[in-house]
Length: 227
Length: 251
Image 1 (cartoon, rainbow over the protein chains, first blue to last red):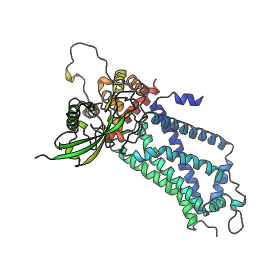
Image 2: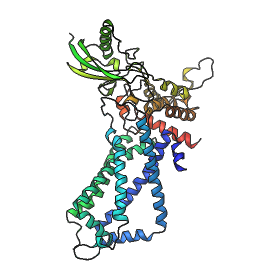
Image 3: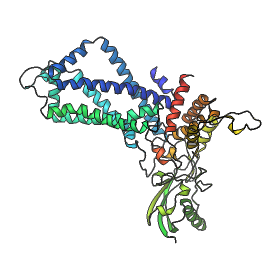
Image 4: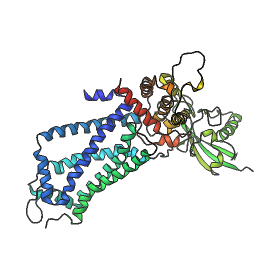
């Protein structure tokens, strides 16, 4: 029922719905990041935050359902737009120069997006549905440190960290195009502010990727070890 | 004093709409560097005609960069590599001796290739016919100063009206989207008082026609802006997006 409705929208409406759902997803990414950064305050603060969040159920289920729906709409519409775009040029150019300020990030959007989908599935299995008191939560001193321990143990594996950082790079790149696209698609343009928005979009994308990646980096550097 | 250069041309040849098309290689020898790109094609065509071969078909009209008829993708860029220059105003002094040049038609589902480098751009005409106009009652022309126009709007409208409808934006767009063209047309009429009355209906109809023609969707790569021979800004697309949003809200 939702899909035929979305399908029937015009090109600009599809883009605008993608932009608005994208904004909610960006807000989620920022909120999630703020929660993650509790890890720097120690295991009590981090686990306390996680427990407080879990304590919000069943209200949290509603939020999660809405978020999942937003994610699926964003995904479905972008897939539809990409498919339509592929149809629009049946014969490819023999020679092609990439021009335009946002060409690279724009053309990589479907790929960075795909990486993010794969990451979300892996990440949910990895952390969200992890057993907080199971063997993965036990650190070198033989004690369980809850979710903190799970995160620490996961990032103690360099391959795990590398994969995570790669996904965060994709997320950052996706957002660097997405944030400024949001303004353009909803029709905000100003000769002075638009160049600033484009710079801010790149900066915020980079910042988000760095902030998320700082946690596996901190584990690798031994900053988060429990003494 | 003029120099001459030799060029190797890889040109798309296609007999008609249904032909699959292929590249053919031509030599252009002793070409005067003061010639325009189209004059060089004229020289090649004269030779082909003398040899009894079919000349290369390409669109052209004014040859002074204002009509929007000429268009072709040269070495992967619509109208060639010079910024804000139409193909007819691109001169061979900007190419090197013994250079190989690939010349292709504008490629888009909405612009079917009629022959060689000639594409059917009537999709643009149908978009204009769907709403790119203002309705006025006939009669004596009113005195020019009866409708005041803000200077800023007059300038922006004129910038958007510089669009010659050549289709380079569609050719440059990774998605073959026509949003820069439609954005420019929506903008230049909407920015003037005469365009206010039908503004919402106009943007709805023009976007609907654009979608119907099979153009792709804008993904904000801004390649169109970089390729436009008239320097149309992507701010026109933002304005169209805003207009469309408002029109749909009040539908």
